[in-house]
Amino acid sequence: MQEGDQAPNFYLYDHTGSRRALYSFLENGPVVLFFYPIASSPICSVEACHFRDLGADFAMVGAQRVGISPDSVDKQARFAQQRAFDFPLLSDADGTVASHFGVRRGALAAIAERVSERGGRHAHKRKQRRGLLARMLPVKRVTFVIDSDGTVVKKISSELRANIHANQALWYLQTQHRPLAR
Image 1 (cartoon, rainbow, N blue to C red):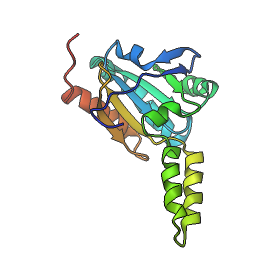
Image 2 (spheres, rainbow, N blue to C red; image 1 turned 45 degrees about the vertical axis):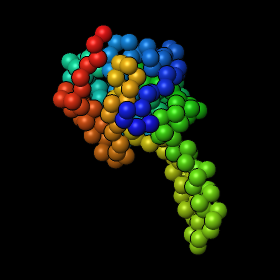
Image 3 (tube, rainbow, N blue to C red; image 1 turned 30 degrees about the vertical axis):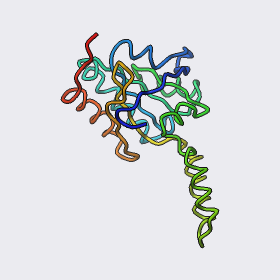
Image 4 (cartoon, rainbow, N blue to C red; image 1 turned 90 degrees about the vertical axis):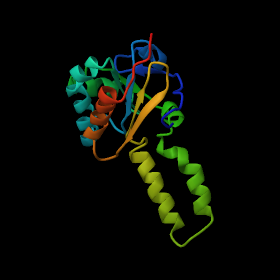
C-alpha cells in the first residue's frame, strides 16, 4: 500500500470485543492507522503511548488514531487497560489486513524462497533468519494516514524510531492535509 492507493475496507474486532470497520471510522474524518508488531513490547509500548499522549493534537485536526497488530483481542485488552489508551486497538490475528496493506513480513516469503532456491552458499541461513523474524515480528511497524475518502495520503515506516510515527502523521495533518469537503 502506497500513498495515493485506496485503502481496502476491513472488519476486525477491537480490544473491547466490538467488530469495527475501517470505513466506519472514516465517516468521522481521517484515520491514522498504525501497525505494530507486538502489544506490550517495549518499542510498541513507546509508539502507542506517544499516540495516546498526542490525542488532543490529533483531535484538533479531526483525526482518529487506530492501532492494529496480530495480537488476540484479550492481549489487546490488557495492553489498552495497562496503558490507558483512548483509541481502539484492533486484532488482526490471522494477518489478513496486514497482508492487504503490505506490512506482513511473511507476505514476501514466497519470493524470498524462490530466490533462496536458486542457491548461493548461505541461502539456507538467510531463509532461517527471515523465518525467525517473521515469527517474532509478524508485521512491520508502518503507519498510514487515510483520508475520509479512503485514500492513503501519507505512509510512515520506521522499525526502531517509535515516536516518528505519531510525530510525522500529526505534522502531515497539521501542515499538508487539505480536508475533503463534506
